[in-house]
Length: 281
Length: 257
Image (cartoon, rainbow over all chains, first blue to last red; front, top):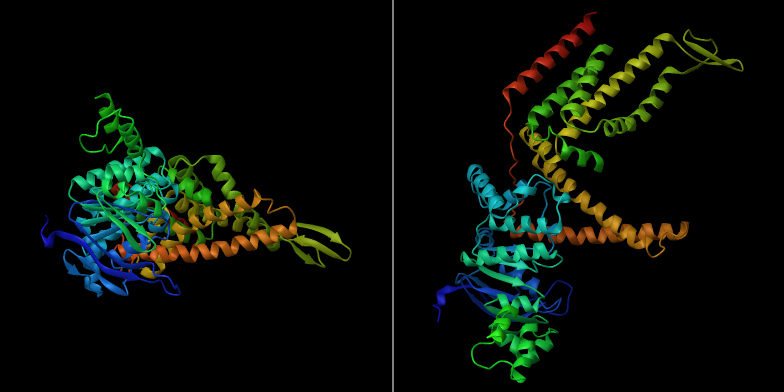
């Protein structure tokens, strides 16, 4: 097991209610995540995913409970918040809500300058992330002439330039075309390999099942289930309560198992490719 | 406006140093306006057209159309200057109208023409800037000129979000049209009002999320950004300086003549 100090994000009995609302958006949420993990958040609209993310980076201050980053509680002072926001970056769901400048270069330079980096090194960092994210071909275009996928890449670069330890992605693949969805996912994979802790909200059960180390099911501001993808997706009751279908590969696997096409030995497959391999032996 | 913005991003002069272009446009504009000679204005006009169209690669037809926009205003105001209503006919032209004449003097006709040429030349200065220099680059120059940060930040945000606002407005209009929302005058009015309120509500929501997103990136009240700088070229600076000196000479000549 991991040492206690290895928890990078920790929520303790977190509750948050939006002003003027009766219902709690977050209702006593307790979660902790280890460094370098891939965590998928699932749950319907209004289940509290976005609110939880905003708490994680100090935008919202929970009325009850506390948030810990790297083992120390978030301090809601100027300095404390700066520190938290440097460590935890959020890529918002809608790039148009995040990009405020028409110039890609200006846009990306914003975060790093706010960290107090001098201009020279900031310029270098921005160039680096533009190169790394494959933004070069459209870097000179204004934001309003970029496609949805390109805007998404810029939105991710916005955060990466600040070198966070935790990257939060709020439905990164929503409303992207297949090409850019694939691209964004491969970037996420690469980032994860480089040691970043990644928290992602998604509605794509199949993807979450195949990608994540851990899945958190949220429902009406509460944690319905947290565990490995096999544990969570295997819990049919919880999945149904969260209005989620079982992953296609899991349903198929169960059928094949029942009909005796494949044997029960080994772990259940995570992807269709895995299953194909199992079937063909 | 959108057309100018699009053309500007395609201009071949887009990557020239923004300060150079800004100084060129402003200096030329000032000299053109204070000069008393038509010759200065004519030179300014042709050089600007050459730079914007030939060097910048803006299609000539497009440029001509853009020039027609201020032309309409210009002609109307020139007519007001040139044409008089008087009991006595003046020397240039006179049409009787009962006991009165619609008339003008030679000197006022000449003055009107001079003004026209000058105004056109001034417009080409501004077109040069707006058709070769991207708004975000102009903001960089303004920053160097120590324009207050708040003004620049506002301009930056407005420039970015005006496109989003228009996109949203046109999407709403399309969806209204597809539901016969513009069938007659009454529904048109109602649809327009509906669009207005929808835009307001969405804008307020958007600004909230934008603020969160900026805070998430450690925003602390000042929109700090880096501008991309293109190096100024010695040759270009020399050309601009020489040209402005010639213009200055023309201006002085027009004064002492």
